[in-house]
Image 1 (cartoon, rainbow, N blue to C red):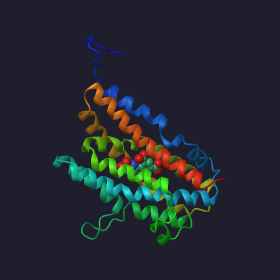
Image 2 (image 1 turned 120 degrees about the vertical axis):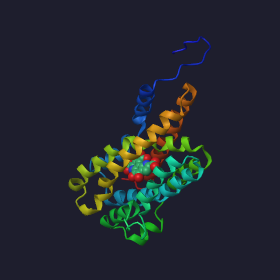
Image 3 (image 1 turned 90 degrees about the horizontal axis):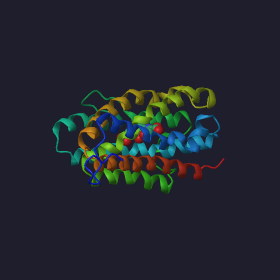
Image 4 (image 1 turned 180 degrees about the vertical axis):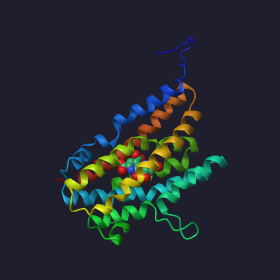
Length: 241
Ligand SMILES: O=C(O)c1cc(C(=O)O)c2c(n1)C(=O)C(=O)c1cc(C(=O)O)[nH]c1-2
């Protein structure tokens, strides 16, 4: 314990030590979940892959609502100008800005490439209750919390590039029945996640400055890691081997 004052109040971590503490939380990332490990090793059945795609779609479905909740709570114009890109990344741009299709469309293509018709995916009929509860908890947290805390909760994306790279590397060999163009979502997310993390980390390192606040940031990140973990627990149970 670093208690320089002798008062029981711990010194804050330096910026780089705080970042290292946040990054160390990657040990709890769903990349280590048994279902993901099996998926990555090529051991999932087509029904399990389809079940994962259809359920993970609900995460895609709530992300723009989560980001809109953060925007609605954010008083800082400079942050809003950057944050709004996240909504457009997922929803696409509409006719005004040139009609970029966005991540939800790319995920829909992934579903189609794996044999899930568009309407079936969007009907959410395959989404199991615990996946819905877990994702809804993320939106709820973003609605009720100071926007900087909600920004901090997005930092699981620090660990996402590797999980996307693993899928790009493994799926063509393990799951050749998933048509290759369907994997585009994973490719496009890598640079976007890196960009998002750069911004999210800057907000987090600036906002959580006392040791108690830094500890709170770690708790928030754990809460979000638990959401992703709980989703895979539920998917694993719904689609047994
Ligand atoms: O496939 C994954 O494992 C994974 C994880 C995460 C994440 O770590 O939160 C995101 C994504 N994908 C993703 O595609 C995405 O757009 C995304 C946005 C966010 C967020 O919290 O705002 N996380 C993630």
